[in-house]
Length: 317
Image (cartoon, rainbow, N blue to C red; front, side, top):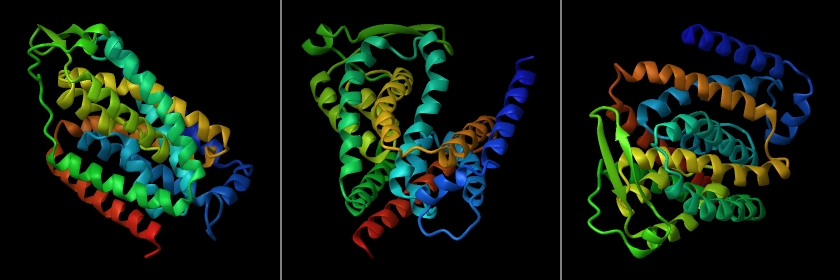
């Protein structure tokens, strides 16, 4: 019954997408979002849908968020203005976070005591980042985006998350904020207790993460997990789950700025979100037989290329 329900939902989503892209009203939005394109107005939404479908599969296999791949690749290989790409990138990351958030909270893989202080800082700074991103010249944003994407690629290459970091003693700030708890590990039936340390440096880093998430439209999952896991000492599963919950708050704050400025349009948002979500469903099925490590290195190579392309574009080379 659940499988039939998913099939019906998928069919409805596809028909909704086809109905939306068949509307001539999108032609006006296309003129604003697409720079110098001579194609029919419906061409790029259709291409974007299939591109994001493949992107959704790769994101699942590589274990990275769709927003991290979306912004550098779409801005590098599609003729859309960067402001529209960043606004849609936030919605892409937000859609995935909202889909996963309730289930993670139900299983205690996302912890509110850990998430709320971080979310307050990151979401406030994401608003600042979004305002900065829309105010600064496009070439400056391109240069900063390229450098950030290259840094993310290097981070994915060299960082090694720890399943259960050893925290001998909780620091004072973590204790005051009650950043501690327990969750049940389904694979072993074990009750895992956890607490944080180095809380103050972690909170300061989330200021930077929030600004970058809003400025570049990347989401922040690529940075949330290493800080929560490697720096603050939260278990890996808890870090991943809490990161997804954080994205639903942080990206909403930044996305509102882009929406308010008219930088999110159905022309890009609908095919991107639908394509990525359908691709994610397929990616989960392929994950059982694929070799994620190989896919991960391919993604790292693509990110290095896309980051270099954005950097050179910003420098006018």
